[in-house]
Image (cartoon, rainbow, N blue to C red; front, side):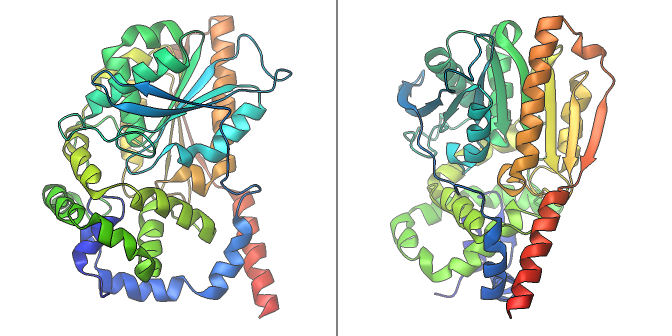
Length: 392
């Protein structure tokens, strides 16, 4: 099947129609060689991406939509009564699986972890088009907390649309943040109040994409079953699109496929349903509820969906927030640089605990902005490529 230009909208759902399929196919042929796949396969993390939750439950949202929730409990010897529950919120077209590497590390460190599939994503049931809004996601998160973490301290972590969900929950239920949250992380996300769609093409094309995207995705949705059945025909092109809009450094083919399966496993109608709310998203005012709370804002330097200036805007609205920008990183940063992101989360939780116990005034902290480079990954990539050259 010869891909049409609009077929690139199958990617991240926000405007991939702007990426020419013919050009992409040519680049893909160059980038996705067998040799390259073989060399980068050594970057696959230990244990890969398989994980079995300690507990699964269904939480019914305020409008009756069943939400899939998973809970991991730390070993009794590692658990501490004052340790918080860490709640993860995933991004648009992803699922709770996107946090697989971080959930393992946090549980091993002694923390209880709660993850959930946002409505219409992953294993949660699909909501109506009218309910596909950031405000409803905020209410959904509140229900998940009520059922899966009704007591004790909380750490909230949100990626992309998940970060918007955390802001929305704070806006509608500020008492939860004020009384229970000791730390929060906003990963590759935005507080809105601006044109949300650019994808590296500039705001003019981005606005056009934002307007035509829902219609394109709706039309694709009428052919969902057929398109899903022939995905294997265009695997190389699909992988190229996923890499282009998800990562900015070499990753293992398994990571590309794992990410692609989440993205392309999301119905096109769901992609379309959420686009208007994402485009209108503005939760700048909600960030006032995180004043005095240990806050981490992190993003990739080459993120095409939520560039560093989106994160900078969040930092400017939360006194004492730490801003970390990671070099050679795209939007799906937790799978691209998992060790770095995990380390940042562990440090965040520790700071949050210390601040809560010692009464530290977070808002008085000087603003910190750091730029990190994942040197360990660079070395692994260099070794893998050298090994491949030696074997050639």
